[in-house]
Image 1 (cartoon, one colour):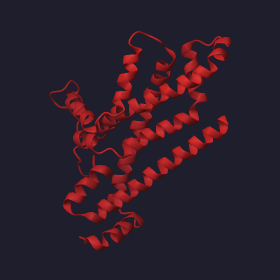
Image 2 (tube, rainbow, N blue to C red):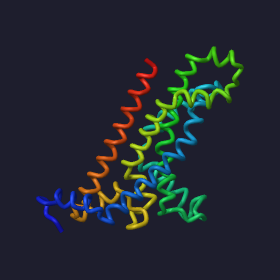
Image 3 (cartoon, rainbow, N blue to C red):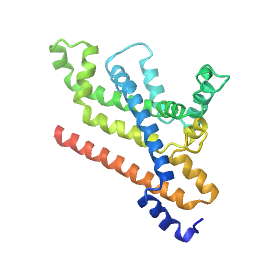
Image 4 (cartoon, rainbow, N blue to C red):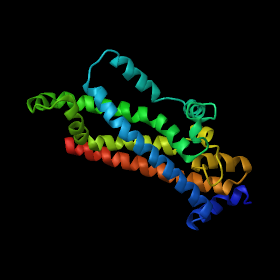
Amino acid sequence: MPTDANAFQTALALILGMDPVLLGIVALSLQVSISAVLIAALLALPLGAALALWRFPGRSAVIVALNALMGLPPVVAGLTVYLLLSRAGPLGQFGLLFTPTAMVIAQVILILPIIAALTRQQIEELHGEYAEQLTSLGLTRLRRIPTLLWDARLGLITVVLAGFGRASAEVGAVMIVGGNIDGVTRVMTTAIVLETSKGNLALALGLGLVLLVLVTLINGAAYLVGETARRRLG
C-alpha cells in the first residue's frame, strides 16, 4: 500500500496504466449516471414544458413543490427508494434493491426535479416571446411543446448537463440503494469513500481525479453551449 507521499504518483500510474479495477468503477458510474439522465430528461423535459404552457388549479403549488425538490437531500431520496424496493416494500417482488437499476431510480428522482424546473423556466420565457406567432399558426398547447423544446434546445442541453453533473457526483442515495458491492454497484463516489476509509489513498485519489476531470468537462460543455446560445440569440 502506498504512503501518503507517493499516493498521487501511484494514482496517476493507475489512471495512465488503465487499471482494470479503476476502469470498471468508472464505466459503471458512467453507465448509471447516463441512464439516469436519459430517463429523467425524457420525463422532465415535456413535464417542464407542460407546466409552462398550461394553467390549472394548484399549478403554483406544483411549481413550488418542484422547485423545493431541486434541493432534495440525496439520503432522503435513497431512503425512499430503499423502502419502495425492499422486501417489505410495494416493489420488493422485483428484487431491484442493491442493483444498478436501483441506483438509476434514485438518481432519476434526484435530477428529474432539476431538469423539469429549469425547463419550465426556459419554456415559459420563450413562450412569452412567441405566443402570438404560435397562436397565429393555430398550434394547440400540446403541439407547441415539441416546437418550443426544439427552439430552446441549446439552453436545455445545459440543463441536462447540470443534471448529469448532479448525478455523477452523487454518493448518499446510491450507497443506500446500491450497497457499494464490489464489481456490482460500486461507483466512483462510493468507492472513494470506501477506499479512503481503508487507507487505500492511491485508488481513492485516482478515482477522485477522474471524477474531477469529468465534472470539469461537464461544466466546460455547459459553458460552451450557453455561450453558443447567447451568441445565437444576440
